[in-house]
Amino acid sequence: MTSALSSAAAPFAPDPAGWQLCVAPMIDVTDRHCRYFHRLLAPRARLYTEMITTGALIHGDVARHLDFDPSEHPVALQLGGSEPRDLAHAARLGAQWGYDEINLNCGCPSERVQKGAFGACLMAEPALVADCIKAMQDAVSVPVTVKHRLGLDYDESYGFVRDFVGRIHDVGCRVFIVHARNAVLKGLSPKDNREIPPLRYDTAARLTADFPDAIFVLNGGLAQPAECLDALKSFHGVMLGRAAWHTPGVLSTVSTQLSHMPAEPDGEQVLDAMMEYAAEQVQRGVPLRMVVKSMLGWPTGRRGARQWRRMLSDASELAANDVQLLRRAWQALAPAEPETVAG
Image 1: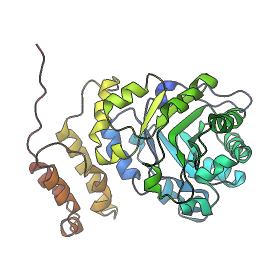
Image 2 (image 1 turned 120 degrees about the vertical axis):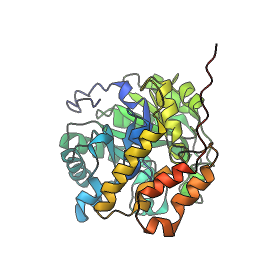
Image 3 (image 1 turned 180 degrees about the vertical axis):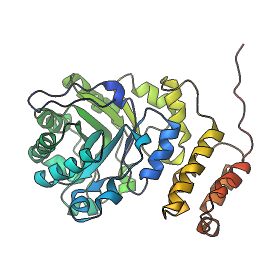
Image 4 (image 1 turned 45 degrees about the vertical axis):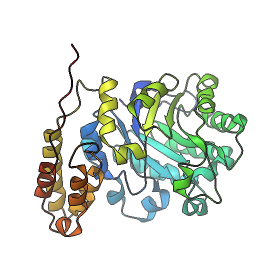
């Protein structure tokens, strides 16, 4: 599903199907254990790492940050940084570890990221972003993409985002993930920035007309399968964030509706796979709580879901690192309601 990138002068021709359903990069959420679980629920979704800073890869434990299970493909590495040389180095590491895409974060509004002069504040420096993208493209042969907002603070002019995208498009970037809100850099928390700035899907959709050879993936506010399918009438793909975390079953529903699989996965089989995976991870010294945290919202809507969450959040139970906790929690759930067959 990964497209080949020839050069900035001759941009790669990405297959839109590769970005039809994506799971957003979320700090402290989309670690490798979460991605393994999401892959079981959505066999063709494109998964993204948490944002990893260039400094963490230059000065930290590269294997800890970049290791992933082969089943996660297609999987993208999201980088945070603003120095072209450092980003090129980090991108090269990502490609060496086997990532299918390198994504530059130009959308995170947190103060910590702003102090590092990257994230959403990079939207004010499109020439620098273009240099960063070019440096990464020269370093790797996988797609280099951008995740960005529609604007900064309270400037809602379309020209701002059009010119930002245009400058990056000029150096050969052809995949843009658009969080359809502005980023307010002062006065709003990251949580507020996901909820308070208004969603402007129509503005984001204008980009698809102005850059017809590029892929645009819509992010922001999407929670229900019907919303995703409706968005795909205007965009090449959708990216789910908090919905994939709070109600991960939505990934299976959307995947089925997109014909990525014939039916939603059997819950028992997913459970067995996660128990086997958890046992392997615990044997390697990974605490069970790290593996199961992404599963808390999985049975949302079923009777017993509260007990499931309670059991998988119980510190004393988790401390034993006994993967049978998953089986016991599953047995607390009421049987899933059978589907009604029309006729």
